[in-house]
Length: 178
Image (cartoon, rainbow, N blue to C red; front, side):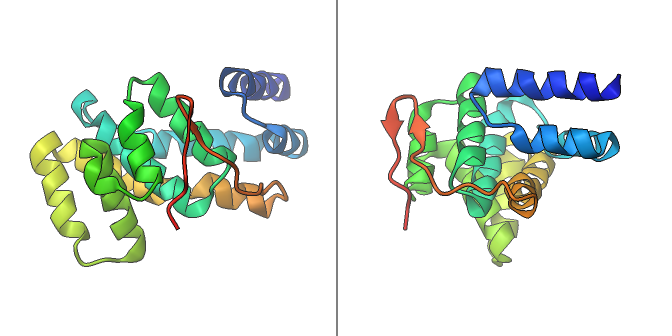
């Protein structure tokens, strides 16, 4: 019973975002408990704080995911951001290495990049996020910075790593920053 529910959820995700969920189906078949663990990860990284902080949160999630992958997982984050009303231009600017031009999305993107790199300026950007969007937004960005890499790394570990792909941002094909 639980397997069928989990498979249905995976198929729904695949349809909604044109995303390959083969790895999820394999995990579900082997261990529904492990698949439920994957589902619980969403509770961690999906904490978004206030609605006003959504662009900065997506920026942080995008940077973290891009650090771990340049393929389907990043495209999924992009598609989810667009679905939530995030404008394509700041997403494109971040992916192309121009986060200073990307407003709140770029702020979250730079924050996550610095947190991942253990940069001393991370705290400065955290304070900037907190001042502009509140403490909940700063917490949500820290969660997103930590969690975005989880899925790409897990997929590679399960034998489902994908090669880099062109990223489509509302019809604009991104040129990944070198």
